[in-house]
Structure formats: C-alpha cells, structure tokens
Image (cartoon, rainbow, N blue to C red):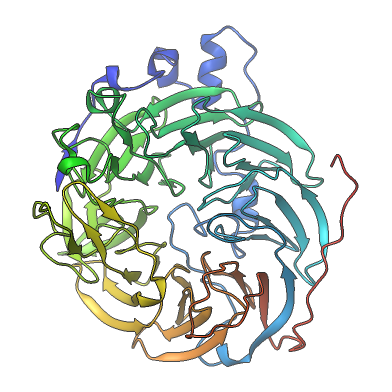
Length: 541
C-alpha cells in the first residue's frame, strides 16, 4: 500500500486549465461561466433541497453524502422487524448481464425513483407501487448503475450508450443528454453524485487497450463539462495501446467542505504476464482518492493494491465518519474493495490510521508472484468487499464475499460456480479496526449493508434478507425474496425495499424460477404480496 499527501502535477489533470484562477474564487459552473465571459447562472444551494427535505427517507444511493447507509430515523428495530410483510411487489420486466436491478431505489416522500439494467428510469408511488412516469432508454448497463435526485431533476447514465442525462423529476421529460466518450470500449455505468450544482460521473473501461476511467464534473443545467480527471496517469502508464482500466464504479462521497472521495478499479491487462506492460504502481488504480472539486486537483490518495494483476478493485464509496481516537476528534475516510482490505485514513491528510484484512486470503491474493501454472487465489475476482458498507455508532458494517479464482501469470479462469461462494457480515470498531462480531452467510453476499436503528440488514444471491442485532450480531429475522439480490437494500420510515433482480438464484440444488421484482415490505404490511402492475405509457415520453 502506498499513500500520498499533497498536490499533484497539474499536467496529469485533463481540463484543469479551463478553470484557471477564477476557479479559486467561484464554485463549479459559476467559475467556468465567468472565465468564458458568459452570464453567470444563478446557482442553487450546494446541498440540493431534496437531500435535506427527505433526509429521513433515502434520497441518494448511499443514503447520505457520507455513505453511512443508515436510516437512523426508521421505525424498524429489533423488537418489530418480524412484523415486516409485503406491501407491494413490482415485476421487473427487463434485464441485462447482471440482472434486472443493481442500483438501489431512491425514496423521497411519497415518490420512489429507480433505474433498471436497461437504463430506464421509473417514478412510482410509495404507497402502492403504481407507476407515475417512466423514461425509456433501453440501453444495456452492467451496473452498478443508479440515479441521483436534486434541484428538481433526476440524473443518471445510459450504460452502453455512453451518456449522462437529466430528467424533470415531476414528469420524466428529458432536460439534456451528454455523450461522455466515443470509445467503443468505454461505457457510463455508475450512479452519479450531485453536489453544488455539479454532477460527478465517470466513464467505465473495458479491458481493451486504450480504455480508461475519466471522472467528469458536469454543469447540471446542460451537461457541459466543467473539468475532467483521468484516473490513469501517464497516458495509461506509458502504453495506451495495450493498457486499460482504472474505473470509478460507485458514487463519490462528499464532506462538509465539498471535497469528494471515491474508490477506483483495477488496471489491465491482467494478469498479462504479471502486468509487464505497465511497470510501477499504476496510479491511481485500486486506490481511495480525495479531490478538491474547485480545481479537480488531488488532495491525497491511498493505493490499496499497487500494480494489481488480480482484478482487485478498491471500488467502494468511502465512508466518512467523525470519531475520537486517543482522546482526539478525528475525521476518517474508510475505503474497501475486492482487495479484501478495509483502510481508514485521516480524511484531511490521507494518513493511514488503520488497515485490516477481511474474508479469506492466501499468499497469491496478498501479492505473491503468480506462477506459470494456475493456482487458487483468495480473495478472488469476486471476493473481498463486493458491495457497499454501512456505519452507525462508531461501528462499520462490512459485507464480505469469499469466492476463489484461478490465475497463472498469463491466464485467468472466470469464476462460474457462484453457489460455492460464502459470505460474512462484520462489525468493525472504527476507532481501531478491531472486529466486534462476525456473522456467517452461506451465499454470494451482494446486497450491501443497511442499518435501521439497532438492526442491520444484508443479503445475497440466495435471495435471503438477513437482519442482525447491531450490538451482538445475533440474527433476529430473515425473509426469502423471489429472486437473488444484487442491489443494495434500502430503508425509509417503516418500509424496507428489496431489489430482487438477479437471475443467479443459488439457494438450492434445484432452485425455483426467479421472479424478478422490486419488493416493498412494511411494518404490518398487507401480506397479500399481490404484484403491482406497471402500465405502459404513450410512446415518446
């Protein structure tokens, strides 16, 4: 692991010069407009009103800007969680390579917004799941996609169509659409972050030479680029025709000063003769990074896996917390990923405070050179921390996935026996990285961790939602969903929302045919489980 504290060479920033000195005084799109002699648009507040007005619901992908995934004001707790029952179910009619839904629904008052794996966006009624509007794109996505809501608009991406878009939140009418790349080997798959009238969204690289992840800061009014930041340094580490990778998969977190924090994906090719085409650490791949968003400049980075050859992303949205360590108030940024490590750093400086391993490891997963013949590697490419963490009361809840891969110095066998995966949910003390408790799961753990009061939820491809006491780790409730879970669980008020959208339904040797659905459970739900029907809207919406 390597880390850096300070400013980076501006030559490694694409488009930073467009902001020039004006950016030091004016935020985001205001600076660019002033620099170009245009009328300065009237900005909205830095925090969109929706994030404040619906803070007690679930207004953004990770729950809040700190990625706590904590519905602190929910009515659900250990004493009544067994009263959750089906309120409504919506059939998910379309799917892509990884199922029908990988991004969580957003809950804002009486309206729920979500995106399916064909990039289509829906607004539905919270009470009964009935359709309010839909916007069709029919653009396949690999996920984990999703949307952002703010300033009266819905923002997202069109997957393999390579675009970002903005819709009116009340009608679904498109406001703008902006193509971010013309490369056939790059897509736009992540859920964006919305802050200070700016949309943060990244391209995603396939493992073909020249494909790369670039973070864009876009003007929310028209989708124009304010600045962009290339995750891969030195033009893909000196061999752009061969190397690729370094993608941002999950939305950045944002602190009170407007700095953003994000995790990045692996470099490629992999294993590629142990990465001989890309000597060195391959910055900023497999890292946690913080940027100053006024200029798009690096504040600090921590590289969890220098020169990775195992597809070991460090991709999770960093969890931002304030705690007391050795009697001193301390701000932490905590990252994790497929490396099977969790790293806590001082959020102001990037200094590593603690680092721990989670899940199953062996010498090859921890960095031993790969031999000429295939060996078992742990964590595998689907291992480590595959889905988002949660935080409450100085405790970090970490969903862990254990599934081995086979690698040699030149070859990789894609894991296919997903039913062989096991998982864990760990409760980690954020002050020192020690484990408070660990709960075992016999599944491919892929539904994130989500907290409500004194109960924490997770689940996986067996379709089972598990609930645990946050203090003891005792399991207090389970629910069998109608399909596998490959989307984070969401809690708002007295409701739990489950994206049962995975065709990989691995709960038995003879599993039933999965019914891909968005399921809403409610305290004292109607128990009928009758699916709501999504009527078709007129074409052209």
